[in-house]
Image (cartoon, rainbow, N blue to C red):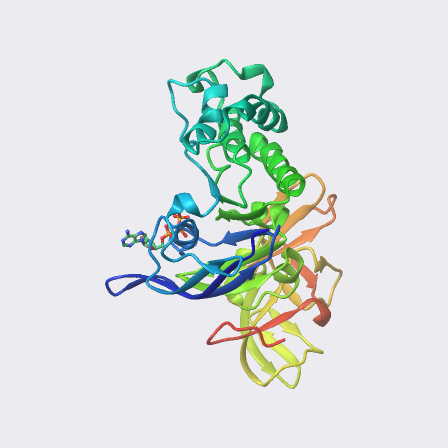
Length: 348
Ligand code: ATP
């Protein structure tokens, strides 16, 4: 059982604010992902939970006990980093066993626990190899097994896949998801990769410059981004965001006019996702020359300039046009998101 609570948690170095007033309860067995661009405070938040960084203000509790002053070793937390942190002179078996020795766990149980952890990440054939004799993916699995073997209450993972190639990243990602489900351990996972976040998380926390922007399930964050930052960060491609004016339910901007919207009159940012619009015949809401066209195999992606931005729309895979040809794009009001032009906050 491990419920983690952060109450008004801030981290400052002098006048620089690394994490600003972070509030969240992470449920027992939850898989929580901290997501955001480089420098947004993800690692600092995780390090405060681990006890590797002091909290400037606020409290962190694990199962109701405030741990602000508790040593990292007393928090029952196992960490996995992007640099695997393996001991080069020890073989795989010894590396996995190491935390048991340090914690003076009953020696009789070591062999069984090491083998069980190794089996979970399919490392049995490599037990006698040294880290230098392993691939990057295998080394990362040793780091995972070393975290698993402790049977901790909490896993903290800081970009554990970032040193792996694209294919290995996908398979190791699936393995991590499966493991966390099987082990029923509260997991906090840091990444700047929104696809990792969306595929792994029960809930995602999106951060920017030390401030939480939105907390929600991947679906909530994708379907109802709280502001233009989240809208522009989640999804591949990210949401199209156009500048214009809303007047009596009609949004008007450069080469775009969409009617049937609900919102206050005045300047707004309008968003929609590439896959929600389509390339129509004449009389679409956007009419503009093709800037680029990309063949994706299952679809053709068209980009045009409209509403002061580059706008992408997914067309049928057989759709073809020349750069410069005028295309008409259908954008129905139901697929549109409206944001405040100044603050970027969601309006509707
Ligand atoms: P990345 O994805 O690049 O690891 P991050 O979101 O994990 O980024 P943090 O490492 O948490 O970001 O850093 C948050 C901010 O705090 C950054 O601007 C960083 O420069 C700053 N920071 C981190 N450690 C210190 C420190 N010891 N002293 C001063 N500033 C720091």
